Image (tube, rainbow, N blue to C red):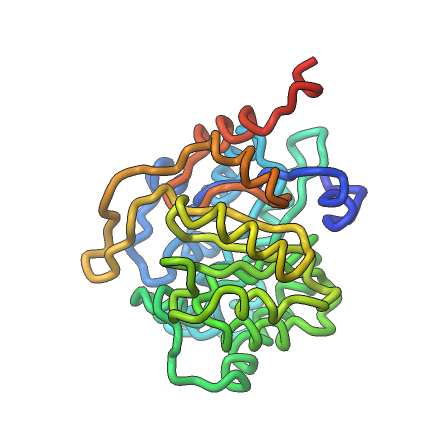
Amino acid sequence: MKPVRTLAEALGAGVLVLDGGLSNQLEAQGCDLSDALWSARLLADGPEQIEAAHAAYVRAGARVLITSSYQATFEGFARRGAGREEAARLLARSVELARGAAAAVGEEVWVAGSVGPYGAMLADGSEYRGRYGLSVRELEVFHRPRIEVLAAAEPDVLALETVPDVEEAEALLRAAEGCGVPVWLSYTVEGGRTRAGQDLAEAFAVAAGNDQVVGVGVNCCDPAEAGPAVELAVAVTAKPAVVYPNSGERWDARARGWRGDVAFDPARATGWAASGARLIGGCCRVGPATISALCSSLVTDDDKG
């Protein structure tokens, strides 16, 4: 159901469980995601599949759903022949589909409009490198139209996610300023630094003091990075932390496939929560079964009693 509390109010009351990877659930449903638009293609070609994937996470216990707009951009849709009006309609549809899935339960479910990085539009893995050669102003200009359309669709929050460097974080926050919707800011990290190699404390600091930002943290990273990042995000910003790592496997952009072993352990979530994480879930390759296990690990003794 549509929430009666703001997300900030809910985070003040405790931990909310995010969903997991949308693409892996769509693939489990038999969807072909080989297109450069990835899961965003289905906004036009299979919206019922997207809503079904969201519903699978709601059934697993997720109470925050991230929309299928991560790789949905005006530029990407234009390459498929969709004009700006059609692209805007598809972006808004991403919020509507998540709301539709949320309506199936009698508990509050929040919808986060996904705003992926510039590199996601390039579909070449550059969101894991950053430093695109664009200025903060140029990145702001790129992001603003999509943010405006998503905000107009009235999600509960915008997820400025998988951000690889500080410059893009600054651009995203500028682009979201005045849109009327709160945001969370989530970096993708490696080795305790941004993917671009910047100091993570300095990266988190761009959100400190920004009242529009309701959460700061990391996503789309190795689970081993999550704990230290949560502690640092809370220490630097005094805001609730958001954390949703990958399964532990690594994306090979050239081969367009996943490599390595699964390392996501739902039991780690209790430690993340103890360190100040209030939005906890999974990213790529983390499916409904793992989200269900994560929900179980976050149940306190009082809840059990």
